[in-house]
Length: 120
Image (tube, rainbow, N blue to C red; front, side, top):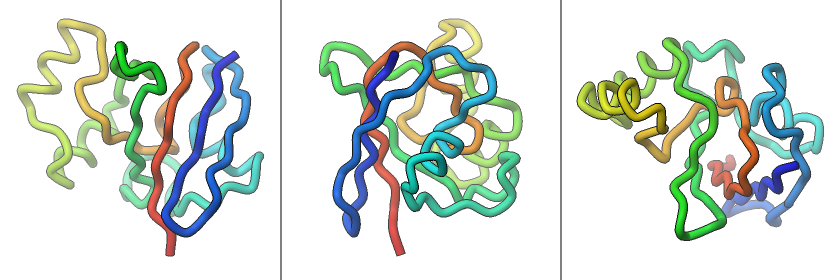
């Protein structure tokens, strides 16, 4: 089990348990289940509305998460949140090279994370 803390400037932080390694539960799915108001639009990785900042609770580790999806790579590149060099490094190292993720695409691994999201 992973502990995921959702944080926003306009809402109280909320920590929830997540089933690590579930291929169907994304950060957005988890947020919706726990009434955490992450903005979203398309829910399939095309619009970028659900952009979140991910960091590891353990300062000695960088967050892993599941690898970026093709949709996520395209949208994050369009938004200027990831470079082609970082994408290439991810393919070699099998580690996520960026703190920016799309909540609708990120599948959790067994790690405790802080997910920061904007609020309106």
